[in-house]
Length: 211
Image (cartoon, rainbow, N blue to C red):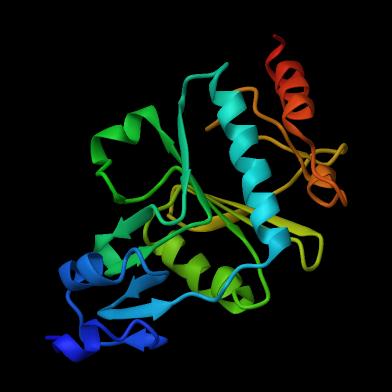
């Protein structure tokens, strides 16, 4: 069990020997994630990371105004993968209407339909390695890695054996998924020096859905 001194030491990078309840009460709102009994402090994000998260969130929210298939949430909202004793805060995650029964006020119990991580200098190994393994073992249906450090995207989808299989974009660099009817993610747009504004996003979504 954690001591009171440990629980108030928010500066520590790792806080071991915590129950999930202790983590949830004392560290979940302070930038920590939970991995097998240890609260782990996440690295600070960069401006490009924040701008890309904001763009994608607005893109999804605009899309959902035409296709009511679920919602998009992000940090500090959590995904609790109890089967592997891991709680993470994806940069963004799509939760379909069918998964709403597993929603709580601050976390989703069980796998999301899509988890999206935006790579920053301090998260390279975690996003490409540790979280890849956790989301796969935790049965997250799709995992998107968007890496603005390398202008690279990777899309993975679980097969029937529970293994992530890489997915391809089309010849125009667009990614589509059956989880989001009519939704199109144009990868080249992610690397623009200035990301689309709200008006441009609305126009793009209208073209997507034929509105």
